[in-house]
Image (cartoon, rainbow, N blue to C red; front, side, top):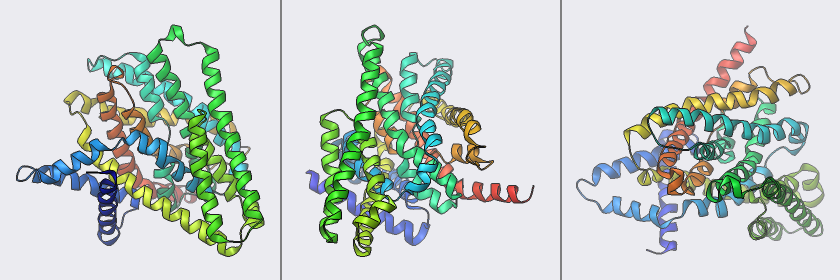
Length: 417
């Protein structure tokens, strides 16, 4: 079975399951696709007692796909660029300091809290883990997933200013979390004594500053090229080239690909840039093209997440640890947001329920699973992959499904004290 056939099967599955969701379930695509895929995979499990053909095909597809490479090195660039392209840059600029704090200090605080709490919980279950492995888990589970967040927030009716904070944070904290994860990964692999502070600062500087500068350069080049022509087909191709070339350069020089794509997307999508570079027709085609790319890759991504259930190692102690990890992660996120929110709330007129909505709306997704899959056996890969999958499923299905009702309930409480 070659890669084209695997891609064909995935697109076919995405089309069928997406149709079922739109026709019958009527859930947000992110939630519906993952739920239906999990149900489909469980049905395949049951059918395997009669005929193992479908189960063998599904297992083969999963084993042939390197989810980490597919998501982090390929799909994420397109998804983040598409998300940033449709983000309100003007509002994002107003909220830039809280968003910056959420995506840096928030991620670091959450990493430490989750890692510390999980270390004590896992040892309570007599699961042999070292502290730095728990910090690695804290780093991979702390970033909120923009791919999951974007679609659900729009349907939930979150106030625009609050939506900007959550979306802005989720766009930027991926890059920060990946850098924190890589740093901890290197410390774990090489040993604390061999990694110096200067190495960590160099890594952070190269990844963050390099990624943002590359994104600015690519966005500026796209602006210059698109300003001089009026051809919607070529202009769409220019935006596509920005993503593909930017990904190659970022990976070549070890810059942060997520930060590169977010920066370039925000610049190209800025209203002032749009007015000076795109005709109405071009703007419409660029938006529709990236909406389609976003939808297609999202669909395939959440079908794959649903199928990843096949690669998990099942253990009763893992299940208990996974159940306890959910409240630990939610509490850690709530605590990590307290300081920034209290600092900025008076200056920027924060909604009184900002922390609660940001905590419950901070969904985890494919990025966390991809990072968990990159762990080695010595880093308790099977344990943390199982816990990560459980947290992601809970996040998408439970938090995602109840987000709209939570926002409505809080709105009523605010209007009727």
